[in-house]
Structures are given as structure tokens and as C-alpha cells.
Length: 215
Image 1: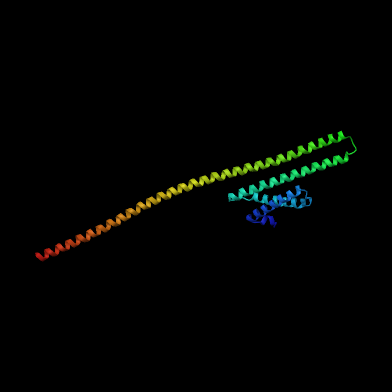
Image 2: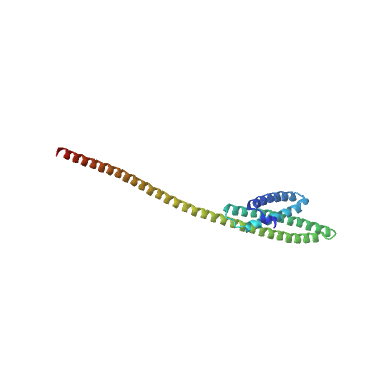
């Protein structure tokens, strides 16, 4: 079985966070000019994508895990967008260099026109891709906000249930206290009646003895 598929949820979260941190560090190095890190960065990005895909397929019962999964996805989208923007910028620079090299002996005005047209097309394409990535990120953010609002509503509903249960428990406690007082009063009355009965019996016996003695 694939190692990615048998990872525990906690291990997958930890590994994904670690990979995202490495991707951010490698992206900064790449932007600063370290081209040797490209292969490792792409490999880590693919691993992050695989882990996040598995996390999004998981039906979390824990709200915290669902929110954390969405946050990791948004972070991955942000890094992917920055990486794509870097590649597009690099492609634009390479295109400029190719045009300058291939048209070096041609008329300067022709070079400017060709470069401007090609640059415009590349810039438009780059903006389209960046805009699409931003739209995806905004959509995920809206879904995350909706999930948060649903969680808040659920917590408020549970709070109402708990308050109602607390009131019922307080009512039951009051009833039990009243019942206990009644039982104590009955016990006292039974004790008093018992003394009255015994006292009456003793009085009657004494009266009988006195009658027998004098008569």
C-alpha cells in the first residue's frame, strides 16, 4: 500500500506543515537565484499536493481538523501562485533575451515592436493565471468562512441545549429538596404520634390499675 494512504491524520498534518515550510524556504532561495533547488522544490510541492488531497477527502468529525486542512490548502495555493508567477517572470526574461539575441542585427524599431507584442502577450497570460489562482484562493477562503459560521451556529445551538438542560436539572433539584423536607416532616409527625400513642396507653394502664386498686 502507498505510504501516503496509510499515514495517520496527525502524522499527515505534521508532515504537510513541515513540507510547506520547506517549500517556502526553497522558493525564497529560488527567487534569490539558487537554480539547483528547483527539482527538490517541485518534488516537495507534489508531495504537499498529495497530502492535502488526502486530507480534503477525509470526512473530519473534528471541526478543528477541517479548518486546519483548509488553512493548509490556502497556504499551498499561495506558494503555488508565487511559484507560477516566478516561472512566468523567468519565461518572460528568457523570451526577451531570445528576441534580443535573434534580432540583434535587425532594425531597432522592429526589435522593439516584436518585444513589446510578445511581452504584452506573456504579461496578459501571466495575469490571467494569477487572477485564476487568486479566484481559487478567494473561493476557498469563502468556503472556510462559511464553515466557521456553521460551526459557530452549531456551538450556539449546543449552548442553548445545555442551558435548557441546566434549567431542568435545577428544577429537579428544587423538587427533590421539597420532597426531602416533606419526608422529614412526615418522620417527625410519625415520631410525635408514636409518643402520643405510647403515652395514651400508659395513661390508660395506670387508670386501670388505680381503678382495680381502689375498687
